[in-house]
Length: 53
Image (cartoon, rainbow, N blue to C red; front, top):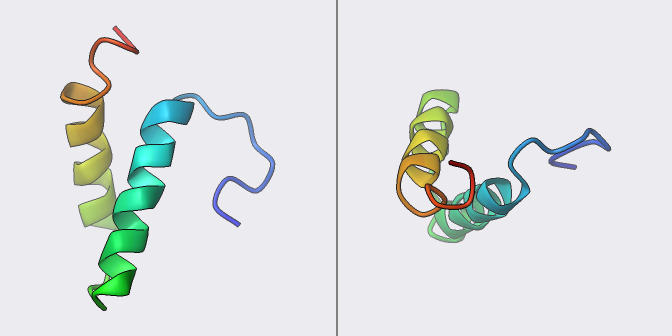
C-alpha cells in the first residue's frame, strides 16, 4: 500500500510518481529511495509546477 491511509499533500504528483515506479518495475529496474526523491522533485518542478505553485 503506497499511501497507507495518510493524507496526500500532492495527490496529482504522487499518482505520477506511482506510475513512474510501476513502469520501472515492469522493466525490472529497482527504484531506490534517492531515485524516488529525485523523481518526485522533478515531477513537482515540471509536470505539476502549475498545479502546486
